Length: 150
Image (cartoon, rainbow, N blue to C red):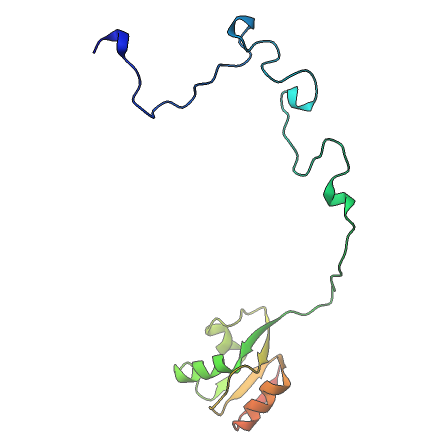
């Protein structure tokens, strides 16, 4: 090994490109491979997302559609089989109120809760919720429980 055959370790260098804009003698001077004029040749150019060179962008050519109801109420759904699971695990005994659902992380304190009818309920429970489906209400009352609308 001597100074004439020293070279960097394999894979340690990446940039094999010529430096741009360093005089005509470098072969990449003048326009520095950017061509003549136009936005891409300027310094500070950054391509805007969706920009199509001044053509009307797709996002503006396609019409708006749909409807968002500003008065819509979002409910967090809790099914009967989930309530039965809480009873089986000993989390609740006879009443399922809003704080019990929040403690069990089935809802947050700012959400509205709707009891849904999936699964079956064997335990006699007093269930509190903001809304109930007809099947859930019937199943709770059939098991000897009580429905309380908040």
